[in-house]
Length: 636
Image (cartoon, rainbow, N blue to C red; front, top):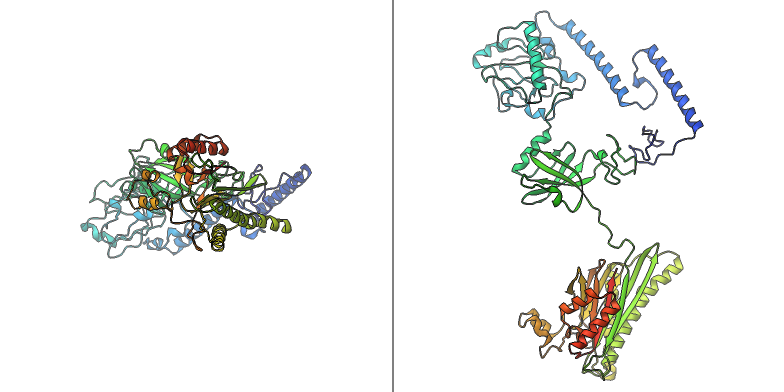
């Protein structure tokens, strides 16, 4: 199937183009397919007749077309063969009969592309008058050399010439006078050695022996002695000859330290950087250079080399990053340690075990939105049963669902009127009403009105806007209470704690010694700080935390609403997860029920209403000395 966008041939059953990733059209009707087939046959027959009449096919002379790799390689092979024959013919015409120096002017770099062993450039040497640090005598890999014209200082080798020469030692000093003898090209015949001239049969036998030794899978050929010159020429390196990958050497060196950036492991994983190093494990970030073998998106293994996009899902196959775990010899079970994602490949190289991990994409903990279940309950308490309950609670919840995604907005507040002051119950009611009015108007009604007028969902409020709105609402409540106190010459006030939930985030607010708790993973956390005298004594280490329940000055607070025109407010953000439980309560609850019991009740309660009832019941059972209020929210 030909891609209509980039004209790349694809498999007949491919859904996406392997070159551009575009969706491929379905199969054409039978009549259309047959017409295309007949046209293709006629074009093929005309091309064959033209090739037969004009000789070898030259794509450069043909109209614009798409060549297969096989046809292109065949064309280049024919061109290289013609160029080689022409060059040899011209060289023989210009070469003197008594000298082979003209043959040396020919460089095999001009020949067709020849496959070279990876890393051979590191073992190539240039020697003048003797072996250097990287000479062929000390190299375990065959060096790629070409015989060059002789000079006064000795023979010279040229790296990258495309010919393979057996490992040899430099000639001893007494044989330096042989350097004046011309050396013929390694392309035509084996290099001359210091030994007596061998016959043609002996040279051919030596060539075959060298090739057999280099083709052996056990080990490369080794020099017999350092003071002897042993050279033999071999043909160009072919894929059938075993070639040691440079990545093996890099992996073997890993035992002494981390792998460097740019190292290739397993022939496909390119090291980008070291992420973390532990006692028996190193973790690297790598890029898969052969992503076609395993599609990161759908896991397909039907793609082929050269495909840039998956033919099944259209995902881009190049440049995908993975985590590569390198385990030491002591680590027996690497799969147990890889728990952050999905292991897509394991291999052993250089004595080390490697596991390739595809990190899991961060999943939304609320795929269908946040669902809230809330309840509130308040009780005067046993001791103050005959007195007005000075606590007030607020439960304001709007939860809409669009396209199966729930979008909750809620406000949950507990206000504790100042005990012993005039009209404490009025103070808590004024604070609750003021905050509820501001939040309902700006956070609930305004977006609904805007959506009604524009017929489009408004953009979600920014975090800074939400924090500012809640803070201004509490400050407005404080200003309202302060004005009433100034007008009526009263000193009423209240503490306040609670939280506003928008989406998957909550914004917790607190003024005074009421508290907000959170249960996560079955464990209870106090999320607010008591603005009281005993709270400061505990923070300063002057009393123990358990003494706050019995300290004679436990009812003295230094921050409340209505006390002064300006009040400092604690406000911070808390991200929510499924299973979280939020509790806001007055001091009449937490002073009577210790934290371990609160934790147990919240974890065991089947719903918020039951949790509120059980918490108030426990507070009354433990004394009920003050008004008791609780707001509980289950996050689902």
